[in-house]
Length: 67
Length: 137
Image (cartoon, rainbow over all chains, first blue to last red; front, side, top):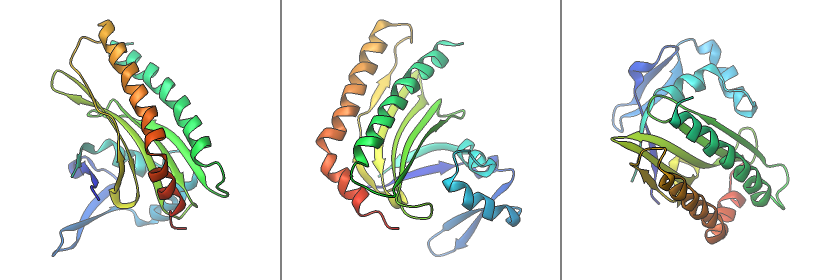
């Protein structure tokens, strides 16, 4: 099944950081620099308001690729 | 307001209404499912609009997205229905706009794009319904 991927410019991150967590696959995790924000970020999924970390992530998307 | 800001505002207003109708139609018969409608923008995408269907707050989601992207000499409107991990369930209609935004042809093209977008949910209803049905909790 074809997939859709977001291209993220991690240099735009302020409160987020990208960490390569699997050197074989090159998989990258995006986490808050301040991990105490993680739970509120997770909890915001069911909220109508946009969490500041979600906003930062959306602002860093510079393209999308379908293949 | 600039011409693009006016276009985006009108486009979103129309799309938001369609998203509301779609959410009601797609979730008829489903109990406990949630949906979220919203939009964002950044320097590359003047509009990123979404209708997200969730089985639960922590479960899988199905996203119906419409993006307006800046391209050279114009704009690209893209749409799709996407499941977990970016799996494309349905690829929606595309529209490239290279005309001046004041050109009446732009509205004609956008109207036609909306027709195709709405038709997609009639033509692909079974695929989308199956994707909703099998969302993990």
